[in-house]
Image (cartoon, rainbow, N blue to C red; front, top):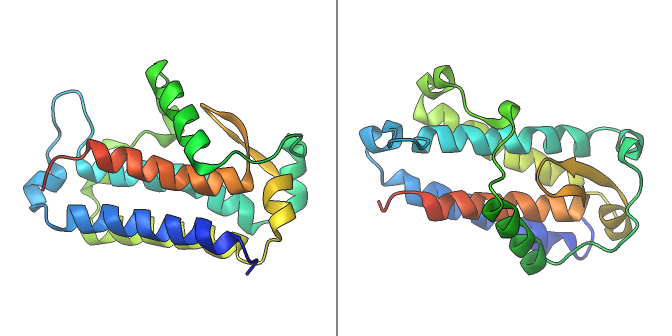
Length: 173
């Protein structure tokens, strides 16, 4: 593992754990309840899974595939700047693309399976970049529907930011 990626991956693990810990106290009814016009907690879990899945697949595959989006021409943004840029995008009204919107049928999956899926996906992202060099994390990029092209390092940070964003929106347990 590269010397500086552990901090990004530790943050990803801790964001997942904080999210999982918060919702572990929810009753099944609270986990499945769909507030008016909002996603249920189960749907949020599914959304986070759907959002991380393409990243996990791309970072686990051949890096040449990422060349379809070119190489980064600027340095990776720091975590705080990326979070601020995401907040601006949210304020502009950006919404999740259709492929990342949870489907009602998916919420029929057991709570344990939903939590296992998201954990496995976040672990897959971490495993996919565990042997990347710091330079490659900042060189290769992939598309984000609201933020444009992000370096792989930024995308890892985005998954943490995205998880934290949805955690803040969850009902108090």
